[in-house]
Amino acid sequence: MKQMCVGDRYQIQCYKHNGKIHRAWDEAIVLDIKKDYIVFGNNKTKVIESEGTTWRTKEPAIIYFFKNKWYNIISQMKKDGIYYYCNIATPYIIEEGTIKYIDYDLDLRIFPKGEYKILDRLEYQYHKKKMEYSDDLDLVINHAMDELIEAYLNHVPMFDKEQNENYLKLYLQLKKESENGNFTS
Image (tube, rainbow, N blue to C red; front, side, top):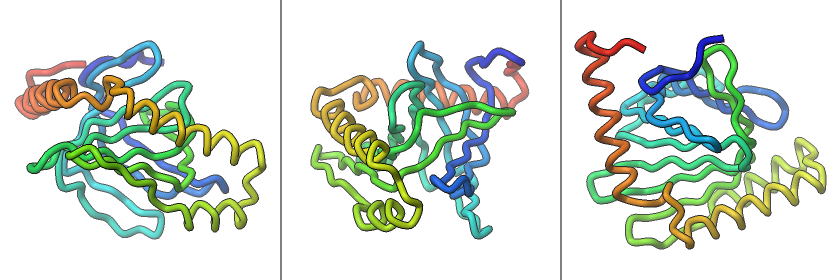
C-alpha cells in the first residue's frame, strides 16, 4: 500500500449507521498529515448524494479527519469569514484511495462572529430510533458533541483562522502545481 503524501488526491464517502452510502465528494487533496489527524482541502468539488443527484461545493474548504475522535471539522472559507461545519461521525478509515466514515446526524455549525448552533437534533432522534442506535452509541455521540464544543471554546488549532488561511494557501498552491503538471506525488 502506497504511503499517503501531501498533494495526494482522495475521495470522501460518508455512510449512515445502516451501512448505506449517504454522500460522496469526488476530491480532497492531502495538505498535512499529523499523528492524530489528516488535513485535506477541496474547492468546488462534485458531491454525489445517495439518491444520485449531484452538486458542487461553493467555496474552498479545509477538512480535518481524526483517527480517534468522533467528529470531523470542515472550515468553509467564505468571502464573509470562516464558517465551520462539524459532523458527529466515526473516526475515519481509508480504503482504496477513499476516506470513509459513518455520519451520526448531529452537526455543530460555527459562524464567523463566534456563535454556534447544534443542528439536526430531530434527524438524530429519528435515525436513532429507526436504525436502533444502542445506548452506548448514544453516549459516545453525545460525548463527542460536548468534546467538540469544548474544543471550539478552547480554541484548538482547527478553529484558528490563521492556520486555516495557511492551509488554504497550500491547497491553492498544490492545486495550481497539479494543474500545471509540476507536482508529482
